[in-house]
Length: 290
Image (cartoon, rainbow, N blue to C red; front, side, top):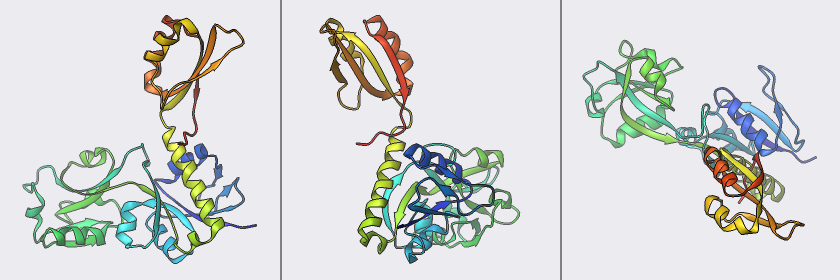
């Protein structure tokens, strides 16, 4: 059987990645400290790595494809094909930011004041490049973790990854600059993409993953409506395009199906009921594929 080697991130992004794949139709099971999880798609050979390592393994062909961050593609200077952007993170569906932070009581208020100072970060290569482009001379050292506690005793500032800024505030740090906005990417090896089977498999996975993200926060509604009430109902209903309208056995009635944001449902259902809709059914969506 043909196999596609897929690298998925182990660590903070692992659970949200597994959940996304589940919505896309791939059930992945992994026990603690297991690096080769089981997947119900036998054509996939999944291996767990740190997100930082995946771009290089994809570039060299040890992996056909993988999920990693845009930040780690830039940091490792990996030559890979970015198949698609997947906007999700460990705690939500939004980009993450690499920011420059200093203690709240620091007199440093902008990055120009860091000239000649020491900075700790895990994103060493990109941060060096960033400050060089700004013509600011800094000493950048690699941080193995717990970066927030290193200021001000060990370093003058840090460049750290944040989603909400909560951790930085908890450690009494303030943001003085934004270095990079990053999102999750599905990447592939250029040679693997020359194999027709692997290329199609990769493209299909990308389509299903994007469909799963598109469905996030969306639901479907079904209802029956008397034709005389149809104009009023159509004015109420939002839709990705137009609502689907089907004739019922009763010639005076139609069935309507529509996709909309879950946040809108609580406002719309009472209006639909008030204007003559009956048998209203709300159902969750796993994927929306355009």
